[in-house]
Image 1 (tube, rainbow, N blue to C red):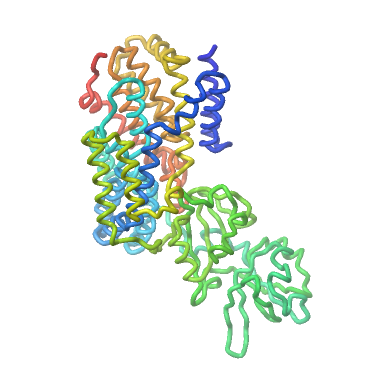
Image 2 (cartoon, rainbow, N blue to C red; image 1 turned 180 degrees about the vertical axis):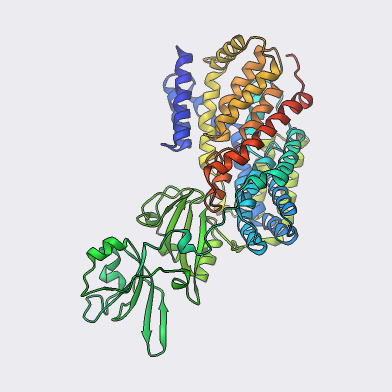
Length: 598
């Protein structure tokens, strides 16, 4: 009965992970609480995930990655693509994937994508080459690069610590390199010669107002003689709240010609002011009193109508670690804090040009904003956004770049040689990175993706409950699977585990997938009387092959909206790549990690 309950918990978790009705980290913590309430794990075991070496190492890697970003090392890599990527699509695709893959081997792969994203748009514009043909290689390259080292992606690290917890020798830092490098090379060859041709050259509208479908939401109103709005401020008149509109621009005509006025709450409205506004035109026609506001002749507004000498339109992407996530534009008070007006929002391919101000923001959402050049620059320098076509960023400490590199090298060196456990080496490196000023002390906690940490920490007790010292569900499942499979053999069993993991990782976090399937793989290897290393290596690789859907990994989500992709694009391009990696894994894992008896 206990096995059935554990399976029910797993199925319940999978449904919630796939539907995203509840945040994944909240689901994971709830699972650990249920296991404690049922008595399947002790209180200490239920909260042991927060002290697990894997969790500590992931925290350290976030901080170390922040040091590489803040000292400008990551930006230098972006500059390399811009300067030396060339004008040939082949060399350019190769350069993008090599650079992002190299970065992702030692730092947060989502951060690597976010840093390189603006450079990709600049290169595309300079070459007149479809940007989506570079964005997919960028995202896929980050995932492939993470397979090279134990710190490149959470599944690698989690699988290694899991081996140690089960009494086996864990993987060393570069034990993943033989398979990881082979897979990266295969991915490069595939994307350069075939994959990029499978990506449709889906050009986007050059006019942002058309791209975000604002034609039916932007109109022009004139303040006539005798209007109640004359000599009244925008705030006091409550014109925006009453009519549910956003004033984008005020055009005031005087003796010196037309003047563009940026609308602020204390801006005073005058007779004959032309208000460029965003709102539901059909509703406005019914609600507007012609004595106070008059419609001009209906026209299609373009980008030129909304920009001026010091005012521009820009696309911005909500970054993966933005504190704005989960709260709406209104709740975040973006207009007041950043000095820009949000005109529209894109979630994947769905565009919101009407009533969207109260929708919760998600990582990868694209916002169309209007503001002064200095305000847009301020956005580009904020870690909460990625501004398309702008390479500005927060101030970098270039003088400390050598120090950050040295700290990262020593961390890797001591971990690779086994001088220090990876968790100790990583945390020591993070502390030194902070004490030397490569990472601001006040930003240390902000640099950690706590949702990932709580997700991992919450899922670890499930693995504990499944082991043979507790409920034993993993061993029970393994014995049943092996008995049903009969004489299938370890290679075919490894292939089955690989495919199962690949499917799971498309609908849930790769870390959660590794934590769920890893214990089962270890139990199955024991049923065969074999060491688990080749089985769990297959799990680590397949958990990170998140190529089939845009929602399977945050790197994919970052490029999904801005690249004008369709869901099927990921299936078409990523599906074949998944098959190639599967074949390579099944051939080379048993060679590099032979099946050895216990």
